[in-house]
Length: 176
Image 1: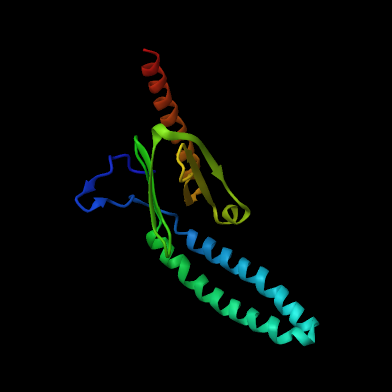
Image 2 (image 1 turned 90 degrees about the vertical axis):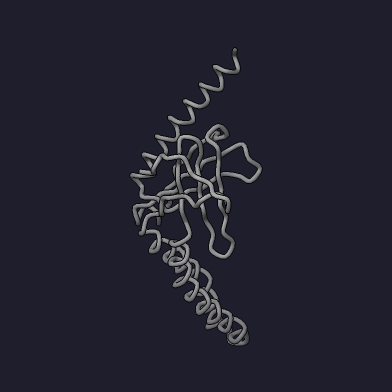
């Protein structure tokens, strides 16, 4: 489970979150790429075979998409695994995501509105889950993707307890 120590800051800014995503995420991301490539390339190839006058205009993009997609499918999971991090403390949820555009997010628990657990079909196949922490932020929810499913269940329970305790404390202070 996540280390609950307070995140430190340096003169250069906040340190990255401590927790790595589950190693199985590399296979999950690779599978997502392969499914997307197949969904795009197969119809182009079928149409290219069935419509001889448009063969070049359909098969050429199919080849380009397949090659570019396979290169991305081989690179992205490895790079993203090195970058994606997360952490939950008693005060906030932290995440670092991105591949080309990296994003570091911190969501104070006092602003958390909902905590959701999502397990799509591919995530279930790989034993992974996504925890979505919705806040009162214009930027939107903080997503902690590619977590071990059991760890994600525990994290949702922990965040629920932490946010309930925080909201009860705010209510008690507001009433006085």
